[in-house]
Length: 471
Image (cartoon, rainbow, N blue to C red; front, side, top):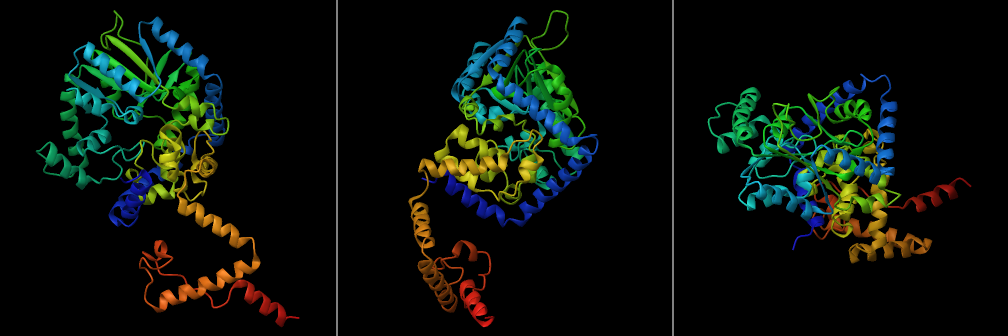
């Protein structure tokens, strides 16, 4: 059986040398960098804004239980329902139970990474419920039967020709790859879903404690249609999405937009606090909020790494990461990709299976530098590596190699001998024409690259010779 680590290496090997894929991702990230830099220039003090966002999220985490209870009390006072889900199974089953109780056959979904995390769609579809992803990027990857490629831009890995071909196969009537016409086609198709949808499911960018409202940010308007047209609305969010006060959005909303897409604000900033009232013309008859734990309280208990829960899912760290740029989002095999995914996933899905993600990093620190809530991501990657080693969940070959390396390094004589032996061995490999084959000790490097030239003498030998000559 292939492990998650083996599958990661296989996909990374494939994507790293897929020049077409790398070109597509480079174009997307270059566009993001330009917009992001322009967006930051609109702030009189971008660093102060980052500090304030970090303070807001730190305050929320320090009193998480109080703010969540306050949020629940306000929502229920308006007739809404709040369900506390300890894990993915409880969250999925609650949504399915509500759907069955109300005889739901069609669900429309706004973009939600939490529903991806708990694998909601397969359960609903298994029970005969049709599910429509209505965010354009999510709709595209749903048609391809793929998970989102990126936290913010799910279809970043596709160009217009790919999408035109997909629409021709799945929808029909496509004679062009013009983006405007492709979007119009998707819009017409999704409009049918909006009016057929009996239940709307959304995520929540923030949960506002003092007013008991969920805050949703979208650029396509699908979020408002999913939450206002169907007769039932279920909002799903991790418990870390709570913030103390409505006024905190004055900082968080523009920072999220700038970090995520370079905008000053997302096109639609929506606040929802309950079901439709008697004097209102639209909105759902029922309003439910599912608060998901799924390992988050255990992470909260870790004083060293709890600041990971500050994440506002802007995706900026993915765009800055040289590993993500080369291997792509699907290589990670997780809901959350890039640096934040590499830090968070071992906590949510188990260190034993996913400890390899923290080693898939250059530790350049770009993720920490760009994070709008100042999460110390590259140090958390190191801490995860340490935890993986201390847990003993590393291959026996790796443990043996490091034991040998330690034994060799503790003796200057052994160090000199094995250095000499290594140079002789590599010279023999080259003379026998074995470079780049599996018999080459440096196969992982020479499979795609030229072997480095090894000097005839070690640095120690050259030093001793020069030092003796200068006496």
